[in-house]
Image 1 (cartoon, rainbow, N blue to C red):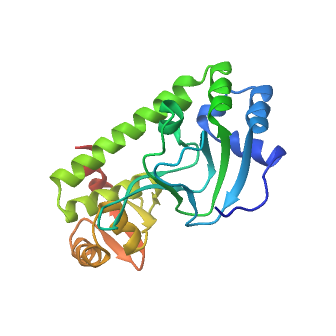
Image 2: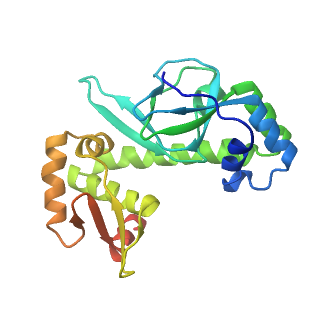
Length: 235
């Protein structure tokens, strides 16, 4: 596991204050959170933990993104979730004491606050944040897992890819110049293939078909999604 120097003090506290769940913390509570954890920067593509690892730790994402990946019997990686700043991962293993159920890999350069599970839960209880930082996070992961299972069981590759692109637009897109669309830079074909559980070759072909339809438009890797198309994710 590669990492750079430890991040401490004002810089770490300033980062943590940006998260909605932590904005009501007093100075003492925030300082204690910084004190009980170790914060480091990681390069993209770094494995934080493997399936089955038992490390008695949870991680709070301070910056960057983490993808949760499972590997099929034929060696194909499927990304089942993409976590963002403010998310906590490693909770399943921390709660039941077992191993992690999947890989956690940095999808970008990332800054992570690592906390021993016992220290984290003690701090959460002392700050009355069990619901926001544990149960809501776990519920969100379960809900997302059910959604992914449903997509893979009931949808073809084209529908899964479309819904993945709409999800990226919803979470990461910015308003277009005309105000009637959302724009974002799409992941690579390989990354999209991991997220929809297909091959890079199939994703390349299906993406071409989607971009030739009326649902999406592109300039290089910049995708334009009409606001009307985002309604598809809500139906």
